[in-house]
Image (cartoon, rainbow, N blue to C red; front, side):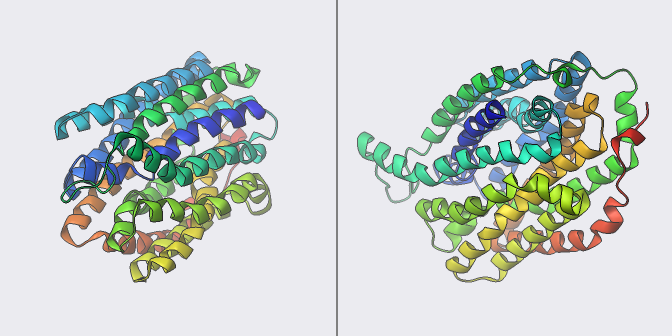
Length: 399
């Protein structure tokens, strides 16, 4: 468990530098339009959609899950270094494609490897290790603006009229590359358990995709991320539209992450108490309330309070879908199960969500992105008993 926690802490610390601030860098520092921003953000899930199943199948069929994870992490670190030196829109698209080739598979592969390393009652215990990742994310997301101020003062960087509000923001990519590379050392130390090396056989993947509870989970995940990926990606623009700064954006992550840590830590307990279907439906409903509230709110302070729901969303939707997959598939298909959840959610639906939200930003403003996503999420949560259907244990999956 400590080594699993170390991996997630370091890797998520790097994500804590990229995720909260990347849209701001693309928009202001790289000078992209709303439509171009949507395309750049859509490249990541589109490429992931093509390669996540391949990485997952490689890991399951060879039994080399830990080695595949290490390769993905190091590839992600190297790709981070390319983004800030890509000088044109086409170059940015290509750099994002290379980053996505590796980076989009780290989360599902890391989850599968973590479950295998944890061993007994992995679905219940995983959240305790994953909570350290949220802690690492929080430290960097909240502390980065202070480090950026010091960096700007050291380099003599000041905001100029017509220029980016935060010159030198590209430092996020270099720092994230270092932290991501360091997380590979955490992955190297993971125990090489029997569950880590078990191999899938011919016909397993076909049986997995024919398993009714798993297919229902894929459909639900697709619809959830189609509605909700766009609003969270456009959060920096929403904060700016209400007069906030990069400091405001950083401070907004405080309530988002403080509640997330205990909820993710206890996600296994919630899974055991309420079941996987209730867990993911609660996460979607919470995100619907969050974004619909942001659409209706005129005061940035109200939006700040609504961000408290982020912890419920991560524990319910992000962690919940991973735990749901863990409960309905056998251990020999862990990587494939997590990979296809990511493919249908983060990748396929995420790409479409980035595209529609980028178009809405240009045509109607970022507030409507929150309204559309929130309303759709509430409808999905209400329909979850019919979409997810009856839960079945993994022994019902036969090849």
